[in-house]
Image (cartoon, rainbow, N blue to C red; front, side, top):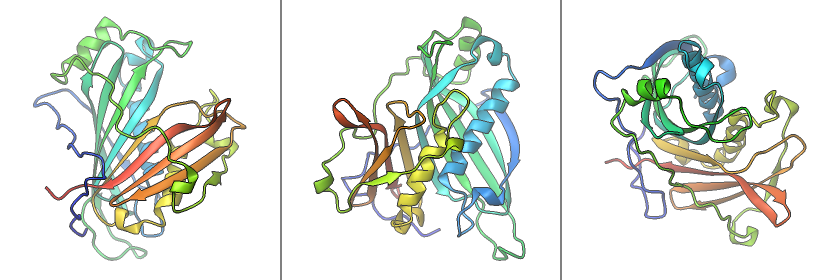
Length: 279
């Protein structure tokens, strides 16, 4: 992968994700990249990474007692650092642990490390892939309201880190610029029935499918180490039309996913994709 360009002052401030605490307990599982996960350059797409994170979370919960005490969680934000893209064919290992927490929410860290292979369709050797992620998870009750994490679960998660006063701080700008301030006009992103889960929530991977559509026009962001940050602000339910507004500022692409409200278009999610600085 080419060396990253220096990040401009317009890009969000980059802070590397914290490494796992020495000797901390973590969940680990092996997976394999499938052809439905990759783009035309054999690179694992961002929406596929979102599905991997969901699979790892489900498998992690199934391997613990959390499914009985804390069965409901929502994701408020996901950070994906593509340090070296994962490609097909390859196997990859997922390691998942709690990087920080408070009484109602956690930062769940997931590290994906791939061992690249070759085949007749992708015969050239490629570097092993590495993607680091962090997601802000909120524990909710069966009514969807933030709920206190049980003492037993808190004790297990707290042993994984030294950060027990986690607070929310937004990383993306929420107010969208006017359409006239952007170089491209708004576009409509068409949702499918398969984009929604049984609870009529838009799947996290579906948001990033829209982002992949935008990144086709910004290959320089994909050709170097890059960070995606997506923050989920309002629910998207079946029948709602999503308007995509985007603006490139130096080495960062900002995307606003807008939905109608009584006050006009408001962001359901905000996205930034920026180059990771070399140092």
